[in-house]
Image 1 (cartoon, rainbow, N blue to C red):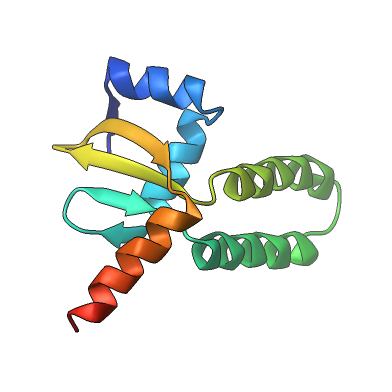
Image 2 (tube, rainbow, N blue to C red):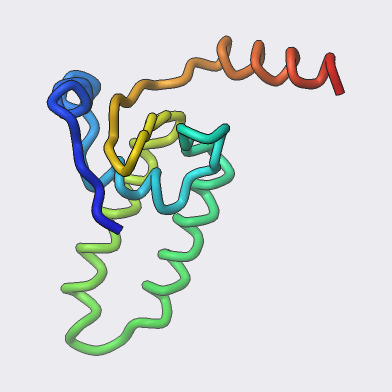
Length: 115
């Protein structure tokens, strides 16, 4: 899947200390929220971190060092992207922002109220 980044999205990614690889991870492993955005919840990042740590345990030999560095970087990126929301339209990333605890609680309460 080809992802296009708008200039606005690239500016916001830099402002918020994120990376384009991290945004791609959110799109790949995050939870779908509505029709146009994805969010990386704590459970999503912990699940992916656990998968990568188990993969590192299975590695052995000379390739272990090379892959372990790369996996550790990906684990760090997953931890950093926790709480990040990515807004997408027509395979273009429009913007990214960090969802605060207050906003998440408000959204959850509002949804629960009408269920």
